[in-house]
Image (cartoon, rainbow, N blue to C red):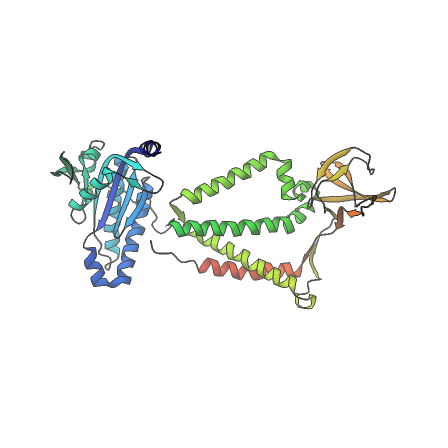
Amino acid sequence: MQYSLSRLISKSRKPVTILFTDIVDSTRLWDTRGDVKGRLLVDQHNRLVFPVIKKFRGNVIKTIGDAVMASFSSPENALRAAVGIQQALAEYRQKNKHFKLQIRIGLHSGMALIEKRDVFGDTVNVAARIEGLADADEILISGSSEKSIKRSEFCLSKKTSFIPKGKKKEIAVFSCDWQQLPSQIEKINFNALLPLLGRQRYSMFFYMAGIMAMVYFGLSNYVRYILADQENVYLLSFSPQQILSDQPILAAALCALAMVMIYLIRYLSVMPIMLFKLMKGLFWYSVVFAMVLMLASSLPPAYTFNSKDTFFESAHLFVEVLQDDATIHEQPALDSKVLKTVNARDLFLLSDVSKQENLVWNKILIGTKKYGWIVRETPPAFGVEEKRLTIANKFHFRFRDFYALLIALFGFLWGYFSFSIRPL
């Protein structure tokens, strides 16, 4: 077992460049500013640092107190991110006189154990030691990182050499004169993206589930009837299950879309703040709509906003299937050819009605200029009562539904405008 675990761990050993940042004199910052103001300054620091790391294809591994640890597959991207971080902080210090944070940055490249949410190994330790050698507003990189980078392009110069604790081999350290380099942050909108941490990801899944439930309810109880009222889009009158069973390509596409959404929520490191606000608003719209509709359904008719009155009525009569495994026949006879089998909640346009041998049959549209017959009730048999298979009605969008949709707008507004950014 130990051998298998060792093999599994060794497979995660890959080349990586580790970047460490640390706020200079952070202890004094907390003492002079206090806990709340100090935390706000660190939060602003994180909101400047994280988007730069993201731009250069880095991953924020963790924040350790006032320090940030990130990983990059490319030493050059790591150095560009380090330059961009220093430039972003310098630019913000010019705009805000109360923001005086200075940081030091250290980079080192080597082999490390890369796991899902962390990086382990000697490379991490050396990168932390190099960061500790840096002065305020300085970027230091190791010789192993410098080998993959053009010195002249990044204004690199050798600063010192040192032997890390527990090592025998000396490591060269180079300094980057980042003030002489062109801007690396021109196309970064620091206020547009929200870093996705644990709680934000859980919130996204929660909001998505509520929105999908609302969409499914709306499609099943409202939209499909409205669409089915137009004969040229009759296919959409079927239940969602019927659409997916009849259209395997569509079903596969929806499954792929769901997997992509789950993957993005699971692995994205940032997301537009506007999208987060919209999702929270739509989630609370769904919640308020469901609550109002349940309340209206439970009250006596006199208290449900004239619930018997119709706000909208369909032009056609619909035949809705009430039982699973109901059969559609070619002719209004039980011994005629079965065209297809349908399930409860499937919906069709009514074309005609016929009574044959004490059975009432509904003629329904099942395809382009294609019709079939389905019986309203199964005939009684020995020891078995007759069973209602279908019901024919017009669709009524009632005032209680309309008012529920309007009242739910307040839920959307509350969710949208109550969104607040958590500290990073």
